Length: 233
View: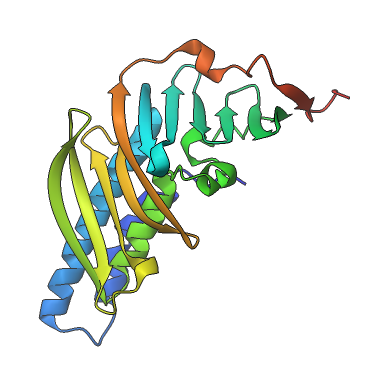
């Protein structure tokens, strides 16, 4: 089921209240907690705003592979291309394409009108190294709630766009808890490096355009199509 679009903002905005209700923190600890909550809320708001943008972003993955995110409005639609597959979400259907010897695309009904494409379930994309804004929001929220987390903020430029970067680590230096994420001023995910479900993931945006190619949302002509929508055999 697609996530509620309001959840990232609610999670981030509630961090201050959750932390300050803890009776065992010192004033110094409380100050650090507030800083974390404000940072998470800012980045969560940026990433959430990206669902309202029209853009095409190309990413360089580890090992020389590539991926892309293409998103448009009126109607809202998005396409995510990654090694071994593609996910397209429009107001007509959700299409998941998997390449296993040959390309097969499975068509299912579209998500509910209240769900935004950028927060639909991305299991296949995630397994192939394309992390999503929602995943980054969840990881930042978890880090802000972790008293042992060390959060550092820096600024940089990615693909010609200004971006805010957050490096998260732990006193115990647990590899699974360490990651770095950068978000552009517009709210587009600029880069990510860390562990996702036990797998190392690294990507960096190589190009960002404020326009899209309409063919990005089409089913590839060479694909075998399996239509699972009602009324189709």
